[in-house]
Image 1 (cartoon, one colour):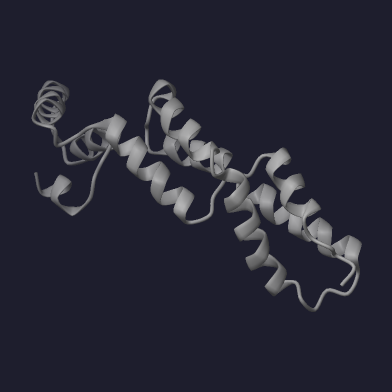
Image 2 (image 1 turned 90 degrees about the vertical axis):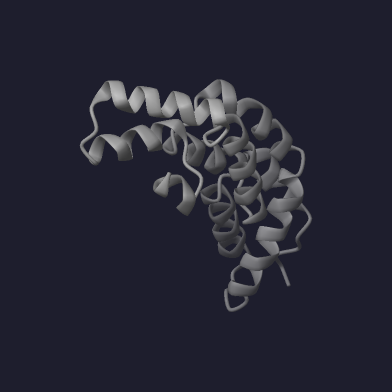
Length: 142
Protein backbone atom coordinates (compact mmCIF):
# COMPACT_ATOMS: atom_id res chain seq x y z
CA UNK A 1 0.00 0.00 0.00
CA UNK A 2 2.89 2.34 0.73
CA UNK A 3 4.16 1.92 -2.84
CA UNK A 4 0.78 2.77 -4.35
CA UNK A 5 0.26 5.77 -2.07
CA UNK A 6 3.26 7.56 -3.63
CA UNK A 7 2.21 7.29 -7.27
CA UNK A 8 0.21 5.12 -9.62
CA UNK A 9 1.96 1.94 -10.71
CA UNK A 10 1.29 -0.58 -13.43
CA UNK A 11 0.92 -4.24 -12.54
CA UNK A 12 4.40 -4.96 -13.87
CA UNK A 13 5.95 -2.14 -11.85
CA UNK A 14 4.21 -3.34 -8.69
CA UNK A 15 5.39 -6.92 -9.27
CA UNK A 16 8.95 -5.71 -9.86
CA UNK A 17 9.02 -3.57 -6.72
CA UNK A 18 7.55 -6.32 -4.56
CA UNK A 19 10.05 -8.81 -5.97
CA UNK A 20 12.92 -6.43 -5.24
CA UNK A 21 11.64 -6.12 -1.67
CA UNK A 22 12.06 -9.87 -1.27
CA UNK A 23 8.49 -11.13 -1.46
CA UNK A 24 7.87 -14.61 -2.88
CA UNK A 25 6.16 -15.03 -6.25
CA UNK A 26 2.86 -16.47 -4.81
CA UNK A 27 2.56 -13.50 -2.44
CA UNK A 28 3.26 -11.08 -5.26
CA UNK A 29 0.67 -12.71 -7.51
CA UNK A 30 -1.98 -12.60 -4.75
CA UNK A 31 -1.16 -9.01 -3.83
CA UNK A 32 -1.37 -7.78 -7.42
CA UNK A 33 -4.66 -9.64 -7.94
CA UNK A 34 -6.10 -8.11 -4.77
CA UNK A 35 -4.95 -4.63 -5.77
CA UNK A 36 -6.52 -5.11 -9.20
CA UNK A 37 -9.78 -6.35 -7.63
CA UNK A 38 -9.96 -3.33 -5.30
CA UNK A 39 -9.12 -0.92 -8.12
CA UNK A 40 -5.77 0.20 -6.73
CA UNK A 41 -4.02 -1.02 -9.89
CA UNK A 42 -5.73 -0.55 -13.24
CA UNK A 43 -3.45 -0.72 -16.28
CA UNK A 44 -6.18 0.43 -18.65
CA UNK A 45 -6.88 3.59 -16.65
CA UNK A 46 -3.16 4.13 -16.12
CA UNK A 47 -2.56 3.97 -19.89
CA UNK A 48 -5.30 6.54 -20.54
CA UNK A 49 -4.07 8.92 -17.84
CA UNK A 50 -0.39 8.59 -18.70
CA UNK A 51 -1.10 9.09 -22.42
CA UNK A 52 -2.99 12.28 -21.61
CA UNK A 53 -0.11 13.56 -19.46
CA UNK A 54 2.51 12.84 -22.12
CA UNK A 55 0.39 14.37 -24.89
CA UNK A 56 -0.01 17.50 -22.77
CA UNK A 57 3.79 17.66 -22.55
CA UNK A 58 3.92 17.87 -26.35
CA UNK A 59 4.98 14.33 -27.23
CA UNK A 60 3.90 12.45 -30.32
CA UNK A 61 2.34 9.03 -30.61
CA UNK A 62 5.56 7.11 -31.07
CA UNK A 63 7.18 8.50 -27.92
CA UNK A 64 3.97 7.92 -25.97
CA UNK A 65 3.81 4.32 -27.16
CA UNK A 66 7.43 3.79 -26.16
CA UNK A 67 6.81 5.26 -22.71
CA UNK A 68 3.74 3.07 -22.17
CA UNK A 69 5.73 0.00 -23.16
CA UNK A 70 8.51 0.90 -20.73
CA UNK A 71 5.98 1.14 -17.93
CA UNK A 72 4.69 -2.34 -18.75
CA UNK A 73 1.38 -1.55 -20.41
CA UNK A 74 0.38 -4.39 -22.80
CA UNK A 75 -0.11 -3.39 -26.45
CA UNK A 76 -3.83 -4.17 -26.43
CA UNK A 77 -4.33 -1.61 -23.63
CA UNK A 78 -2.32 1.02 -25.53
CA UNK A 79 -4.54 1.06 -28.60
CA UNK A 80 -7.48 3.19 -27.45
CA UNK A 81 -5.46 5.90 -25.63
CA UNK A 82 -3.05 6.18 -28.57
CA UNK A 83 -5.93 6.55 -31.02
CA UNK A 84 -7.39 9.33 -28.88
CA UNK A 85 -4.00 11.05 -28.67
CA UNK A 86 -3.54 10.79 -32.45
CA UNK A 87 -6.54 13.08 -32.97
CA UNK A 88 -4.62 16.09 -31.65
CA UNK A 89 -1.16 15.12 -32.85
CA UNK A 90 -1.00 17.64 -35.70
CA UNK A 91 -1.86 20.49 -33.33
CA UNK A 92 0.72 19.31 -30.76
CA UNK A 93 3.34 19.14 -33.53
CA UNK A 94 2.59 22.75 -34.52
CA UNK A 95 2.88 23.88 -30.89
CA UNK A 96 6.17 22.02 -30.42
CA UNK A 97 7.47 23.55 -33.65
CA UNK A 98 6.60 27.05 -32.48
CA UNK A 99 8.64 26.42 -29.34
CA UNK A 100 11.60 25.09 -31.31
CA UNK A 101 11.55 27.97 -33.79
CA UNK A 102 12.13 30.42 -30.93
CA UNK A 103 15.26 28.46 -30.05
CA UNK A 104 16.38 28.43 -33.70
CA UNK A 105 16.03 32.18 -34.17
CA UNK A 106 19.79 32.63 -34.65
CA UNK A 107 20.03 30.03 -37.42
CA UNK A 108 20.33 31.94 -40.69
CA UNK A 109 20.30 29.10 -43.23
CA UNK A 110 16.63 28.22 -43.95
CA UNK A 111 17.51 24.68 -45.04
CA UNK A 112 19.40 23.95 -41.82
CA UNK A 113 16.65 25.54 -39.78
CA UNK A 114 14.03 23.32 -41.43
CA UNK A 115 16.19 20.20 -40.96
CA UNK A 116 16.74 20.94 -37.28
CA UNK A 117 13.03 21.56 -36.78
CA UNK A 118 12.18 18.28 -38.54
CA UNK A 119 14.68 16.31 -36.42
CA UNK A 120 13.26 17.91 -33.29
CA UNK A 121 9.70 16.89 -34.17
CA UNK A 122 10.74 13.35 -35.08
CA UNK A 123 12.65 13.03 -31.80
CA UNK A 124 9.49 14.05 -29.93
CA UNK A 125 7.71 11.08 -31.49
CA UNK A 126 5.54 12.78 -34.09
CA UNK A 127 4.65 10.95 -37.29
CA UNK A 128 6.21 12.06 -40.57
CA UNK A 129 2.82 13.27 -41.78
CA UNK A 130 2.33 15.47 -38.70
CA UNK A 131 5.87 16.81 -39.07
CA UNK A 132 5.44 17.66 -42.73
CA UNK A 133 2.07 19.31 -42.09
CA UNK A 134 3.56 21.48 -39.33
CA UNK A 135 6.66 22.35 -41.36
CA UNK A 136 4.64 23.22 -44.48
CA UNK A 137 2.84 25.96 -42.53
CA UNK A 138 6.12 27.75 -41.73
CA UNK A 139 8.11 30.03 -44.04
CA UNK A 140 11.73 29.29 -43.15
CA UNK A 141 13.10 32.03 -45.40
CA UNK A 142 12.37 34.72 -42.82
